[in-house]
Length: 101
Image (cartoon, rainbow, N blue to C red):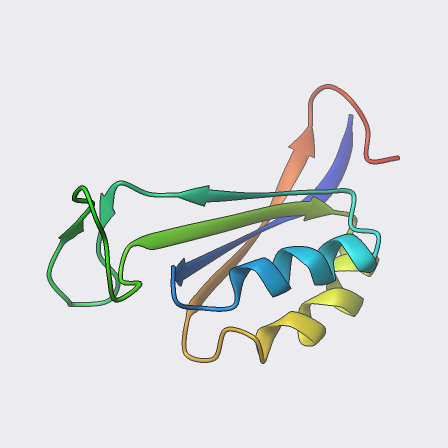
């Protein structure tokens, strides 16, 4: 088992989540995924839910990526400016299966 760092970014559809994901790819991060929510809220705001047609980009998008501490420390400053004022959480995790190569 190895330890790594998992970073979770809580964004809106209107944020630059595509660009963040591409930056993570370009920086050779071990793994990253973006999840589009059907409902959710950020901060103390009301709940937004998906309808047949959504406008305004208020639905949540969550990006989660995992890598070793040194790599996260180097990459995180490069993506923070793409999501100013958004919640970013980082936590130490244990790799139970698979690897980050």
